[in-house]
Amino acid sequence: MTDQEQLTISIIGTGRVATHLAHHLYQQNQEIQNVFNRSLQKAQAFANQINAKGIDDLAQICDSDIVLICVSDSAITEIAQQLSQNQYQGLVAHTSGSTALQVLTDFGLNSGVFYPLQTFSFDQKIDWQNTPIFIEAKSVDSLGKLKVLAEIFSPKVYQYDSAQRLSLHLAAVFACNFSNYCYDIAQQILDEKKVDVDLLLPLIDATAEKLKYGRAIDNQTGPAVRKDQHILKMHQSMLESNTGWQKLYQLMSDGISFRARTNTKCHEQAGKPF
Amino acid sequence: MTDQEQLTISIIGTGRVATHLAHHLYQQNQEIQNVFNRSLQKAQAFANQINAKGIDDLAQICDSDIVLICVSDSAITEIAQQLSQNQYQGLVAHTSGSTALQVLTDFGLNSGVFYPLQTFSFDQKIDWQNTPIFIEAKSVDSLGKLKVLAEIFSPKVYQYDSAQRLSLHLAAVFACNFSNYCYDIAQQILDEKKVDVDLLLPLIDATAEKLKYGRAIDNQTGPAVRKDQHILKMHQSMLESNTGWQKLYQLMSDGISFRARTNTKCHEQAGKPF
Image 1 (cartoon, chains in turn red, brown):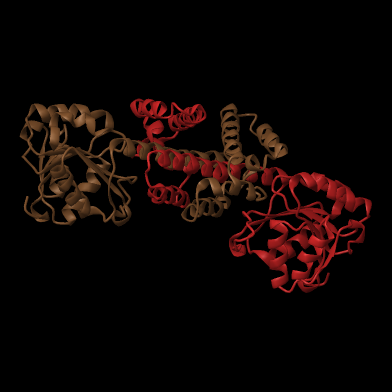
Image 2 (tube, rainbow over the protein chains, first blue to last red):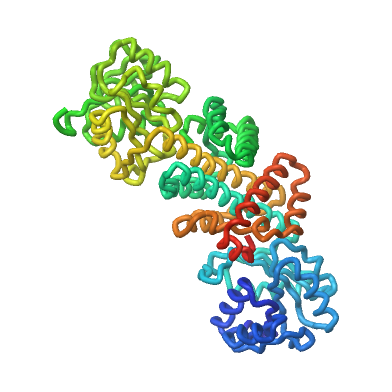
């Protein structure tokens, strides 16, 4: 590899992550050699779109500079074993936020992680310029290659170790998956009383927006911060028909109260209606 | 009251809600007669800003067309009793999302609710044009007055009953207070590993943004939807030092799994990394 143009890549998998990575590389005139799927038909259909060769046997894989494993977390180990048995010589990187580099230990210095922090849907365009990419590798040489690859996608390239990447994934589960579940419960509560769910949108936006200017703990409002026992009890009784939501309400409120006790700014906000 | 110009208003309280309501009315050349606070000094300091008269005794209140009770939820009943003892004759409306109209029963047909769905801080300007205002009243005449008042603030005026308003408040606690607490936990997790908390901002924005185009249940992603036991267990062990967060993680994941079982679109999204 002498410059960016000559970096050759193969992709294992044909799912969402594989699709978005491959299409972006293809658009940037980056050569993709192989695409692997257990179904040759699927592999070839995918490969045809990006001028690559589809394969259904990892023994056939070219010695690309980098092979990107874009399969579900639980399948990474098996794919790595197959690649290793076939004595693949290039750099092997997985694309999982929640898998340690360690699973690619068979590849020694030629192992790495290439993790774009983004939610991928088939039907949504990715804003790569604003997608942070986390790289990690066992050697300086491997890290260099991953850096070149990452910069084809985004200016936001970070070198984080596995523990940091795993904590980022766990944090994203709280900040995104769990907050979305809170939205879901809110919408169910409103549906039951025939109240327009879109009424919450400006408040939800404002809550997310505030994170750009301060810490979440300093923005916390609501009855739990205010220790408004009257409201807390009323809400508990309104949730009587759903013990799961009741427990969640209690646990959330206890957590918020506990945090508020040790935070000054939080107290100052206590007068807000939410 | 023959037209909007002649609607006279008094305000009880000098907190965040009172401040924002009074200042907007003043800017709109709306006459405010009295401002009440138990401290005459505070009442007068507030009143001076809006060309009104400060009072510390509800016996002195003018017969305004509308008196707005802008005090903490727990103080509304007491204020209502005092107003009632002083035989106040105009329309009395409280501004609480979490208090039923019922608490103003002493005022019969002259009772109502004027509830702006918004978070109020002293230092933040309110975007009134996008603030929904919920009104409720015991009579058509009272409702008409509240509608005139509400339209001075916002084009988004809704007539909802107490049960609907209460459900909206409960829903907002889930959608805003609890999602903010999820952000707070996420930030604490990242702090511990020295990972930049701002990395989550685009994901948080995307999660909130998606609500504009679909229901939260249809947008749900993450290990609980995918039933990824490996990740779920790993996250539980990463949270070992905090049993509160562990319980929350479990309860959230159980809830999400349960919802996912009954939702088709949710399954389709299961391959997403979050």
